[in-house]
Length: 341
Image (cartoon, rainbow, N blue to C red; front, side):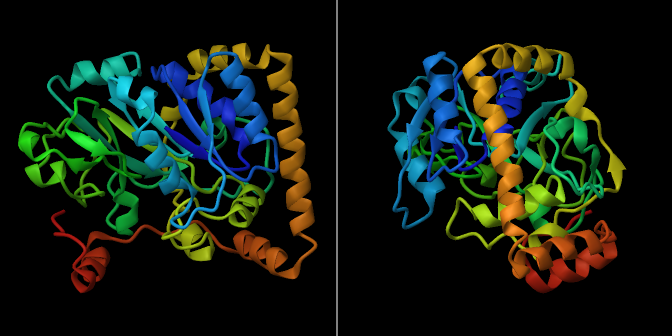
């Protein structure tokens, strides 16, 4: 399940990757689009590749929460074997076998929920937006073991649609059926069984350990500096979340380790992408979205506040990962979670 606004330039690459990884059905909601995202989704639906549900406002709690409520009642959600809620900058990445969901399920027999921890991919000094897959452009990421910020340990949950949960959530399913409590098996991206509290609570993985041995969620939250400015202009899908700004950038701009895991499925992804591009209507819509993105950035540069943000991005170096000792001080003050490196 996906919610999008003004992200048509990234949509075909995202869809090609997730078809290659093994997702078979896509329920996509769109709202307030200016770049042709909604038209592209309509075309993908006509081709039988997705189900598109327009999600016009107003959205008192934000468009994403409105979409989740609609999705809870959708036939596609009811018919699914497994369900996952994703954003356009999140790429499911399997590190075992043939790098597909089938390989992940085989590596985690008995799992009913698999929380995939974010691995944050930094900007790596890329200034200009390019019409290339983010998995190829951005290959520097946060350390495999990152102690701070705690948001870096957030996960998205791939869960079996067996009636245990009544509602979808941004990071995890909600509405645990009391009759099924204690019957689930939550296993993390390194194959460890998680404590029972994860069945009903928690949206972030335990700190101070490697959660990526079998699978991870590659989070390309920043992209090129030009793209980030346009992203800030678009705004957040969740009204309750803080706005995109320099704080968001600094907390995610890690370029400490090379990670080319996004390339594991490159041949299959390229084949899927080529199939999509073979449709002339889709290809034209994609090209129009690329032009819109570049034109929108140029328009924003006419205003001093946006130029100032762009300048700050260029002046800010990659974020320094904190040591375990430094992070322990922060976690001790905030008491967000038990710190056990």
